[in-house]
Image (cartoon, rainbow, N blue to C red; front, side):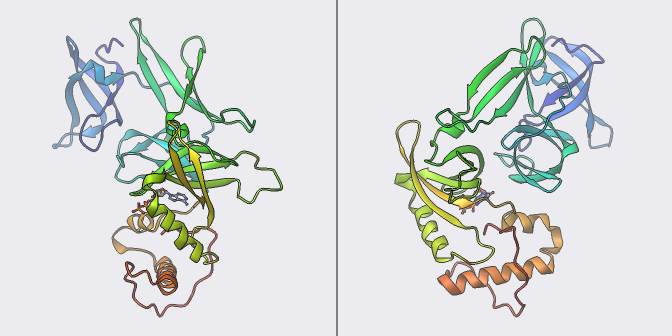
Amino acid sequence: MSCEIGETVEVISIEDGMEGSYFRAQVIDRSPGRRTVRYQTLLADDGSPLEEVISVRRLRPPPPTVVARFHLGDMVDAWHNEGWWVGRYVRREGPKYIVYFENEAPGNQHVSYPKAQLRVHQEWKELEEGGNWNRLLLLQSDHPGLLWLFWLLVEVSSACFLQLVLVVEQSKYGDGMAWFRGCLIGKGCFGRVYVANLKKPKSRYNSFPPILAVKSAEVSVSSSIQKEKEVLNNLRGCRNVIRCFGEEITTGENGQMVYNLLLQYGSGRTLADLINKSGRNGLPIEERRRSEYELHCWSEEEDVSCFSVEESDTEETGSSNNPLKL
Ligand SMILES: Nc1ncnc2c1ncn2[C@@H]1O[C@H](COP(=O)(O)OP(=O)(O)OP(=O)(O)O)[C@@H](O)[C@H]1O
């Protein structure tokens, strides 16, 4: 793009902790290969709009507005701290959309946004003559025998040219007998967690819910999640604890054996998320009572000493349909 004086642009940040986010600005001066920009939302220390001289390679035009429904797994831009941050839509909680940020860029891995704060993620491809916007769409199909998930790279601007791109992240660990591996929703110390959808969600022989969370690791390093399965099996029937639907070995793209733990998909958040979100006053009292009861119940049944939970004199509160992942 030419980036003439007066043009509105988006600047990609390279600052620590803000990498990959976009901030809107206006070009106010130019020199070969560089532009001086004035940000629309970022302020300097004295409160005036921040100005910066940057390489033209960090600039792109503002993306065109695209009206579309978001699907689980779609890449989205979320409006956060005065800029646009790239993440993946992984869950819906009522009117809120939960976006997963792989590198915790906005300070947390999972953040919820109203739809108005999200836009379709598009990538700018610089060409000799101008450039093109590429849009990533997630395609889903129930047709067995076909690879279920593809990314469609749609060139939005010019002649609607389509190109299929395989999602490496999803295919890496392979699909199960009855389920397709969907997008990555989190990474822990012992494995990666994916959304999984049933191949035949309407079959009456299904023993799984239509959507699962699958925690996976190569068999050689899966002892911890195998242990987790034992613990979850012992807690079977315990309310508010994520259910385990068993285990399965899949074959990864390089022929590696992958251990998968099939879990109830937690539409709630983790206890850590809940505590972080509660701010300085901590958990609301009802949540605190419920959590104390859950942890207490866990420690009594399993003698899990790593949870140092005080005996709670609170009464058991009503059961929840949104299990917390502890
Ligand atoms: N059953 C589930 N349903 C929905 N999301 C889940 C589920 N299990 C895990 N996740 C998501 O995946 C992330 C990683 O989970 P995982 O259990 O691997 O690690 P962790 O509990 O965050 O940390 P650690 O590795 O220390 O146990 C979680 O933070 C959560 O956001």
